[in-house]
Amino acid sequence: MNAKTYPFPILVVDDEPAILEVMSANLEKKYDVHTAQTGQEALTLNDENEYAAIILDYNLPDIDGMTVLSHVVKADGDAIVIMITAHGTIEMAVESMKAGAFNYLVKPINYDEMGLLVEKAIEHHKILTELLDLRKQIDSGLEMDNIIGQSKKMLKIYEKVKVVAESDATVLIRGETGTGKELVARAIHRNSPRRNKNFVRINCAAIPETLLEAELFGYERGAFTGAVAQRIGKFERADGGTIYLDEIGEISPAMQAKLLRVLQEGEFDRMGGNQTIQVDTRIVATTNRDLEAAIKEGAFRIDLFYRLNVIPIVIPPLREREEDIALLANHFINKFSKKNNKDIKGLSPAVMATLMQHNWPGNVRELENVIERTVVLTQNNRIESIDLSLSGSNGQFVNIGGQDATFQFAKKKVVEAFETHYLSQLLKKHKGNISASAKEASLDYKNFHNKLKKYQIKRSRFE
View 1 (cartoon, rainbow, N blue to C red):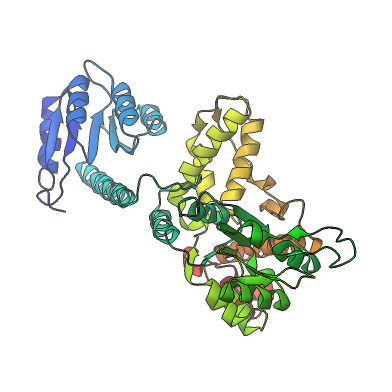
View 2 (tube, rainbow, N blue to C red; view 1 turned 90 degrees about the horizontal axis):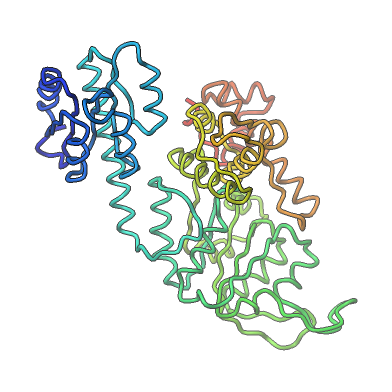
């Protein structure tokens, strides 16, 4: 990288002029370098400039390096600071990492190592700058309904929500269980011209087929035994607003045909009624099912799929946006600390490493569940340990859809969670080798591969 083409300088802080001169000379070959010999001078320069990285000595004549680090990180949570510590004081370096330092160097300085660390810091700064630029492109007034994430994949979803919300187009949101599909659906509604009308939610998989039609379209008095009065259905309640059809892939062929009519004509009949009801309702549907496979099996209508899939949005699983894990974890720590009247400030590096290594089959919902339980049980003001084995059966998180879930729906969710976890563990063990994994599972290669596709498990993550 050429210093003339990179717009942000590097700040080097050390009270020993000879060391400061040598460090600067090494870095000036590639970068624009600013220097300071005191903590106060470093803070003044940091207030006046944006630095790609700061190399900061622990021992300074006026303010110690940890105090300077604390001020810098407080002023800019994304500041990239490399601490310098004397030989034999590694514990200080570790403490600086806990306080927000990017990395550390030990005196006497290995200048090749310093060069590599600065290169990594510059690349990290570039990524943060690109994310910030992308975020600035998104209207600051966009209501994202508590969706947390700064990864490139999530920022692109925010951008898509902004564009899609202005239209009336039907949206199909896809993604694994627990990724936040409903939050995205609500964000689309809240940023749309329909925001002042109803957002009506229905879980299509949790309601028996015999009752689903009545829930969606309503019924007239006397339509069936027990129908003692007229009832307005979900579509009518959502007139002028948005109806959110969760788990759309689970509805029966008969219901698919009736839903297709609403999508095509904007009309339906109440059960037992003779009057056609016209509605102006935007449809946002979600599914974690492979609808293309369901079409091939004859379980899902292709014409309905095309009507639903006008605007597709795919929510990535948490394991594919690792950069959001720390952000989400701290968000949930703050949320549940307030809820439980606790003052928990954060978690240890060891716990964070554990969270980063976990596969998260239950995605954001699993992480929220884990953090809530940990906050309730933690007695200290920082989380020093975490138990992921209680996330669900065999260490995995299982969400069965709430109290209204039918037995079949709940069973399906448990099976899906087990299979996702089991397949992922096999691929991890065999480093992405499908043949070896299938052999150990006693499944033929094609069956194993189809399951990976069904659960959107990519072998490349385990290679």
